[in-house]
Image 1 (cartoon, rainbow, N blue to C red):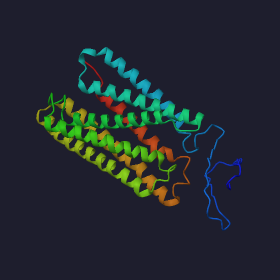
Image 2: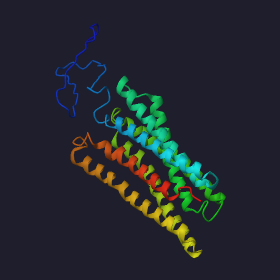
Image 3: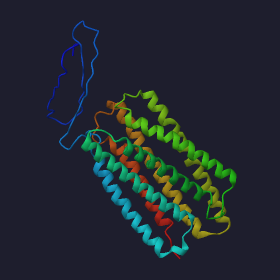
Image 4: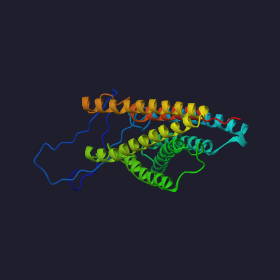
Length: 299
């Protein structure tokens, strides 16, 4: 609007579901102007963008699934309370972190859908517990593969320092990646910055997986020499589960690259969340359930 004129409000009804672009153009020669305003888009279901809405029921069902896992693990733990060891307590912590993360994510999307803005407190909580869940579970598998509670009661001090350093670096880098991912579209984050946020975390993940598989190989060699067949079979199963989960986790990454290069990611906007959020959460939940089965308390 020109100086002295009143601000105007315009509205339009969008008849069809799809991806829409809002374009502003100056058709004259006037250049000394500043335009300000707010764009509000409301769907029949609320304020959540169409590409985010499916996450609302997803995180609700995921929260309920974690409640079921927690009840099962609690029942096992109560029955064999005197037989529990450190790794089984750590599994309980992972279940709690997963439940809190999925609950915070559900509350975030529900509030966003009702209020029209992403609540920063719930957003921060969902990222905090997501990062904590990931790094804690990775380190749980790593220390188990290093023989903690299996062939050695304690890990070496140097190993503990390495693990602590990895945890610190991972929490910082993964938090940055999650913030950039959440605001990359609304704040038009350049692709190069998105790549710089993702690459360090990806390399760190590869490093953790490599260390885990090397430690698993060494541990299984020790168990085979000591003829501990029961424990050896347990870690063989764990290695198979990790190998399958790692291969499965690579598929969504390949899918995202192919889709993005094909039509800039616009053609699959309604289902893109499955590869980005759905598959990783379901995969993590499945691996956790398998680990619960492998390390379930018993006599």
